[in-house]
Length: 290
Image 1 (cartoon, one colour):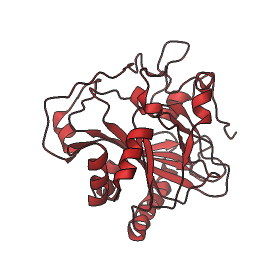
Image 2: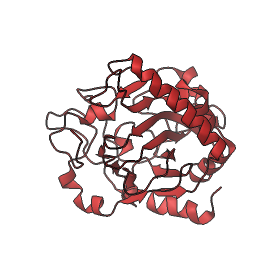
Image 3: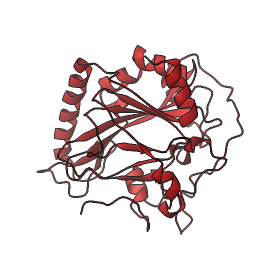
Image 4: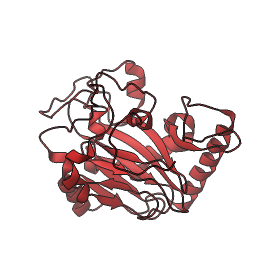
């Protein structure tokens, strides 16, 4: 699925886009499942274990900004990350042993889809080594107008982790934009046709703006780790941990690397999702729709 040149680009820049990995039949199945999930949001009035709701959501006018853990919600989302094409790409980028760390489906509806402030995924879930990445599956055609994922090349190689804590000392899930102006200027958009996938390193700096266009931008995200990368916050259920293996045998010997770590503690005052974590920040970069 990917050339050696793309593998080298990932190692150098920490981000690549692979065109149209999913076929039209799979996209149709995903969109059907997603439509059913959105319809189901009419039955809820607040965040749940499945739904993270946009401000202004009502049962009469459902507005969903995230489906949580979609691989546990509908089989199509688990099927995609375990597909031969995706495993082939992941093996070239990370190695033969692979584990799914988590998943989410961020929905940016036309005219109001919420932004995500600048951050590093590594700040949320540091591991014993940093052979981790996020896959962004474009479920809609994505261009500069509908809030694409923005990633800063080579930002994954820094010797430190940017501070994601607020003035109160609690984890806030974002970086003060005044500290990263140069990095923001160098960011590149991950755009492409529906079915394309972006891959960005766990330490790569990224964010995305509000969708102010008339087009939706739904992005299915998977966080994948090398199987010998263990979360520093601990493993609560080893059986569940191993069920998320995508390739390779069970591993009980973590690989330790000298990587910069800043723990996401004390925890954010607002829990539930990155949107909630970031909602209490005094400084933001992206404009939000009222």
